[in-house]
Figure 1 (tube, rainbow, N blue to C red):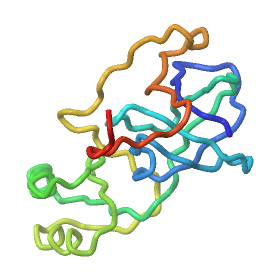
Figure 2 (cartoon, one colour):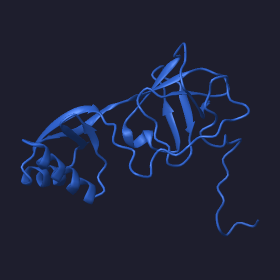
Figure 3 (tube, helix red, strand yellow):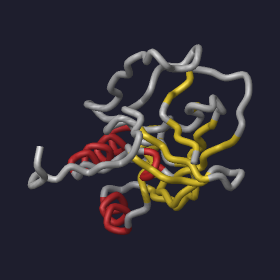
Figure 4 (cartoon, rainbow, N blue to C red):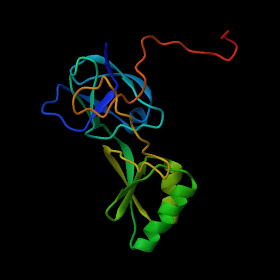
Length: 173
């Protein structure tokens, strides 16, 4: 199985695509299927979010492009900027992930939030589109350049496991 663990800043070729919804693009350990049917393992540092267009590689140096899958979302618009800011405030107060657009907000489909936003005077339209929310005040992180990374690579996103071993608090040292 191909293991993807290194992010590339650019590539001259793309060998396959990894199409994932947002909730899977924010997982640090993931088994997924490429658009060519091949199974891959993705290993990233906790807190890393794979974004649409990110390029990943592994030991065999094939380049895999991350593609944000369309998913059920709501597009939130208002008659004026103040009303839209009120909606953003109330969504943030509920720790809701929000994608910011030019004159709109986008959230994952949620009937309770839809009713709340409508009550604030917003227009809420259902969409099926890729979801790319803001990283948040503590998002982003940093990456270390690895010794064994391919030329032009940003380095491994996480330690590359030789085999999975789960340590439990009761295990002997």
